[in-house]
Length: 624
Image 1: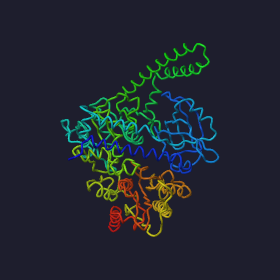
Image 2: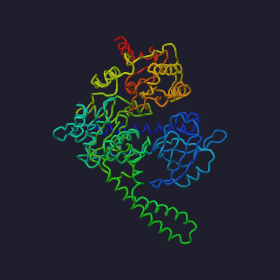
Image 3: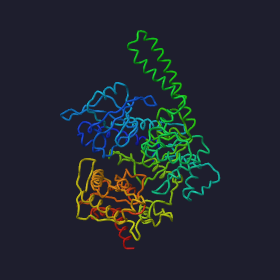
Image 4: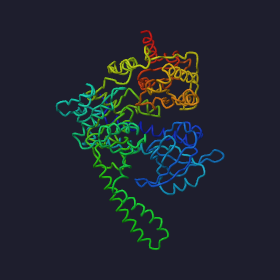
């Protein structure tokens, strides 16, 4: 007999606890033992900083701007909502942390705005000559996940309890009955998926393999749902995924209110954030002047002889400010049809007490189940979209991963309620030969290519996929914990191959047709090395804006005309480490529209059945 939903979720709770303790301990060790150079290389720290202006933002939070002075080409892990701490370093290299935690409010490549807890924190920052900032342990996300799980586990006689028992138990699905709608601009499987979403009373899953138009389908489903509901909640695990779907909804003419800050900051994105809308509300200038008056009165109170009357004045102004805040906020929510935020962001105080008919969770296969429940608590029905054959959620504790913390809610629904699932089957991205391998291995051969992309290529009579075997030419090196491995010869070969491919295409044509290229490696050290090689080589100067180098995770949701994958591993034992996670490889190989070049030591890699099959498959294409 299957395990009860409550027992299953209690186990998830215990596993989340393991992950929490593990990550906390990792953070402690990192903070105490790891040198500043390694922290910078890992992208968790900037040092030294320039401290810029400070100001009160629209939400009345004290914010300070900082900028990194050095190591600007290192990718960092700072993003909106993450907690950070500031530190100084003495002559002996010892770090001293300032005793407050700030939160990232905005960040781009080299500049960050951090929200400070109080004015003393600002004074502490301004009083230091040389300062650094590093990511702090994210207690809040865990607190929200634990709280959501406790609520779901203890739920009785409520919609939340029903959803729990549908997803993980034997409660059957129910459906609305009406004639299916036609969407002539969608393909048949997309149309079926939108109809399934509209008919579902409890849950529907849009399973979108690479290039099958999952976002297009989801936007249509949201748009149609809004004919039946006044407002919906749209969430995703990462800020980037929230931005992407929000932008597409705005293009479709839907009014979106984005709670939280976008990662790619352009005016179009900023214009629908809560903060920017708040600032441009007609009542905001009045609120701003009241807040300013409150701050001035606080500054006077220490010297004032009649403190009581100043306090009374402050309190009455505070009441007025709170009233205005509520009024502005209510009018913003009343105007919006879609509220968009991350899963953790759905617990934001501005969403307190809000309920929705439907929550849409995009990239659901990348989210831990406990994170999904944060948002599901606010809704009556749930639509999950994503692909459980692509990137999994991040779980750092190996033991918790082995015991099932990485099993997502989307996988559970796909397994337990297959009727809720729609698979999108027509892909619009890749040459058919690139798609076919992924389709056979991951999707039971169900996918097919749209006619317009089937034979895509850049050069006539070109083989769509090549494997350049590095056998015997190269060795992998290990460069430090979690920074991973590097294979210098292979990196140099990748860059040489890219150069000769650009020459083959023709330099003018490459620029004229805006051909773009991605270099992917699963290992961060290899990515850094590839970036350095391209940066140093004058040949690439005219093409740099068309070439991106990143890890597999960095390419999630993206595509390029040409993709090079450097697999790095080369050893006698056939050890391939986390290349064993085939979902990552699925993402890597399906980023390419027209040409895919894999570089790897075949003798090492083909000891694994997946890579052996890929190697053989590429061999048959050559023979054709």
